[in-house]
Length: 363
Image (cartoon, rainbow, N blue to C red; front, top):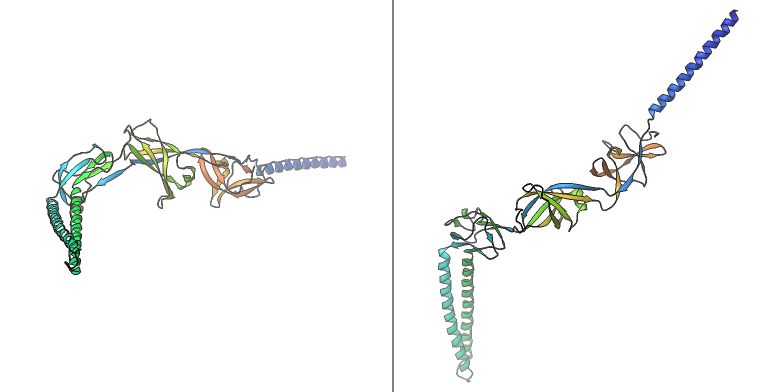
């Protein structure tokens, strides 16, 4: 009887040990599965990413000039005012300088006197030359002296003409004329004001003239985006003073160099402004359509890790992860361009993180 009870006890103990060992094995399998969670894998594909960038720009007159006085003088007449439409060569202002008139009169007097002297010496030389044709009547020395006086008087005459013309040119500076068609944007003098090339009279320009029928739109493109534009591209822009209206202009000039301070390239567009709705000095917003010329790899932003160790993606190779360094390009919504040594159809972990090390098993 005792032997039978002992055998039954051993049977129950063995059965409990077996069940206990089975439960432990199943638990270990669950833990092992938790250590290597499943990862979503994607394939890196190429596409042409198109984005838009809004950059502030400035409108300016295609031509703009500040006009100053060439000589010291006083304002005698004002022919135009702010907002006046002027044509090339139109008289804008008349200045007065009495001393220039006196200098011109004196120069003219010297010119007339020198003309008379030259006419006399030239006539004398011609008579002596004619007489010298009869042998023995005039010595060779007298003929040469007469010719020398004539040449000297002619040189003095040319000097007097140059002096007279110079003062005439100076007097011409007393009339200020428009250098091109445009609008008077500023006027800083009144009748009787003193103006001049130096001193207090030259602190401000007499006038500022702007050409407004054609404007110059200038925008600075950051270095990252300079490769997406070329001369002749048409861009859209708008201004705050005319909400809801969109204007277009084509790229006419590109500087071809980066500004050393802002690392950006100056791009200019010519804007035809026949309606005069746009004004020089307006701040505009230019819309840049950045269309890639070649296809590049585009992946979700979650697939790119940015850490102290650099920028990389997690490549899946032989069912294990491997970090591949990359460079980021443009970003749009939840996608980003990547550049680097990326083989075709490379498998990547979609949701990468720093916690995933090289060699992590991928389920």
